[in-house]
Image (tube, rainbow, N blue to C red):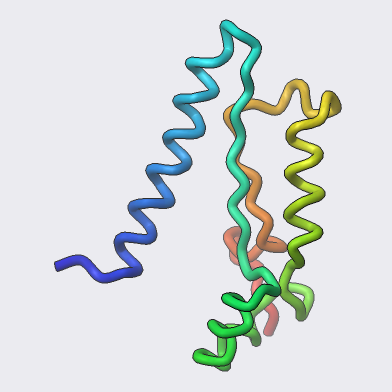
Length: 104
């Protein structure tokens, strides 16, 4: 039986694929679709995860988790006219953590 982490990775991949499929299907009608993939976010769930794993907070780039406001600002950009050419994109809001940037 697959672990919860494995299922989370599978679900994430499906979400990214779904975003790209929607972007392709919506292009004819001018519909764009992008995916926001937040990393460590300062929320009740994020703080709880950090309490359960003290080492989790040590690796967060820039020494702090992102905020809900930062996620909201990214979403506002993606729905604005300024992001007209951004389509079928996944915006990772993780301060570079996915790219291997970790605080040491």
